[in-house]
Length: 81
Image 1 (cartoon, rainbow, N blue to C red):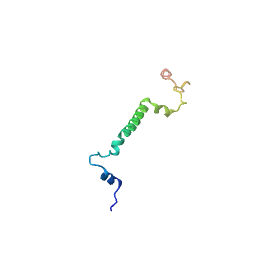
Image 2 (tube, rainbow, N blue to C red):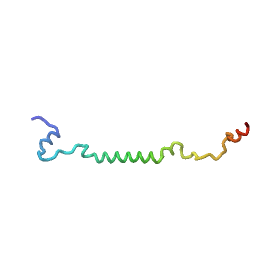
Image 3 (cartoon, helix red, strand yellow):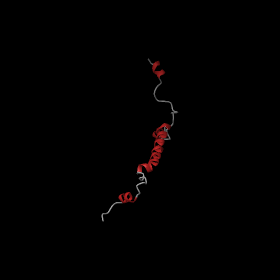
Image 4 (cartoon, rainbow, N blue to C red):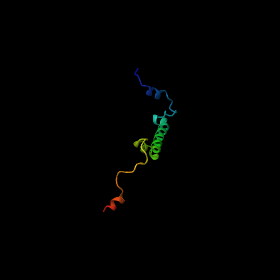
C-alpha cells in the first residue's frame, strides 16, 4: 500500500460538495494588512511630527545663545571703510 501525505489524504476524505479549505493568504490576510497598516501609520506619524530632528542635537543644546558673538557686527565693518 503506497503512503500518502496529509494533504492528499485530506483531499481523498473530503466530500466533493465541500469547499476547499482557504489558503494561508485568504485565512490570514486581514492580520497581515492590520500589521502593515499599523506600521505605516507609525512611520507617517513619526515622520510628520519631526521627532527625529529633536534627537539629533540632544536635549541639552539651547535654542539660542545668550553670550554675544565674537565676530564684529556688519555696522562696525562699514564704519571702518
